[in-house]
Length: 354
Ligand code: TXA
Ligand code: MG
Image 1 (cartoon, protein in one colour):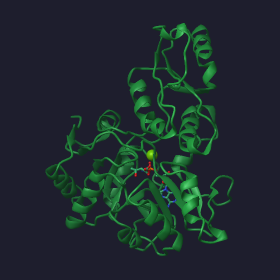
Image 2 (cartoon, protein in one colour):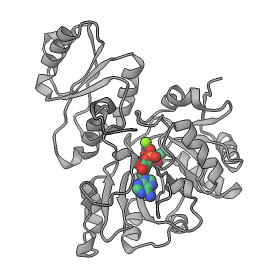
Image 3 (tube, rainbow, N blue to C red):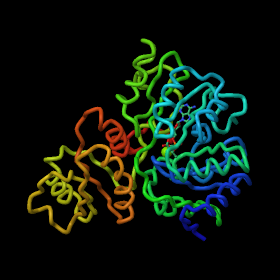
Image 4 (cartoon, rainbow, N blue to C red):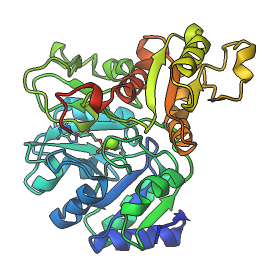
């Protein structure tokens, strides 16, 4: 039987905390995306996450806690940069990678000597963490609550549609409404000599740089790419965050031409178009042969709705998704990153085994 989502309430949060303490899974809202949570200090509970997600077991998970004080207990070393960033952005869409403490299970870190920690900003996530700290470890390991490689869920209904068939009967899916950020947390690696951004996300590079600026010349973040010993970040695989439909990024002004061409070349395919709100589409636009979902002109609003739109279009059975490409500016970094990965298919890159 498919699980159904329950509205978050004092009662359902208490029930969810109890389920976690018994080693069971719980799907929970965060401000970025919905997570599939388990007791982060229990090797056995964590192994269930990998089974349900279909994720390779050497891909590490983020540990969620309700305060920086709790996060410190999971790290062997807590640099000054961590204090700064935690103070500025927690609770919020920021994950810090630190040297792991001994109490962190190997199942969480994928055997690496580092651990990812985050204090989420969603009130339901915080309430659950708080409740779980009274009846259990208070540490929730949670990847995005989708099958490995797919589009992350930003609504409880996405979790039920995407993971329902893989969840045991009775698993609690807490409904906390639509996520306000809509893309995953920014991951900053503080375990090396200088901070590195491993995954762009809800916080922009410039917001992070501003906070680290005063520290020392060692502290300006660099991009993770091209580095010799890059830790495994599954969200950094070339193909990820991909809907079922084949995604193509198109210069905005060419989107109608591309739609017409696609239909000429592949009659019968179902086409979805994601132009910007500000675009004046010509009369062809009203054609019933495609579905149009106009997207916000501002980066934050775009990010907030991106996965919901992709999940909706997937459910409509769209085969080809033509997306007007956003400007290549720093505020669009996270959205561009997700769109590019969605546009990369595993079958386009034969070297990718996952
Ligand atoms: O916003 C988010 O971060 C969401 C919500 C639920 O908190 N979580 C999320 O989890 O996106 P997940 O598992 O889908 O992506 C976490 C990323 C993965 O790419 C993983 O490889 C990376 O974080 N990660 C976790 N621990 C790491 C570590 N010790 N070193 C390097 N990367 C790590
Ligand atoms: Mg994910």
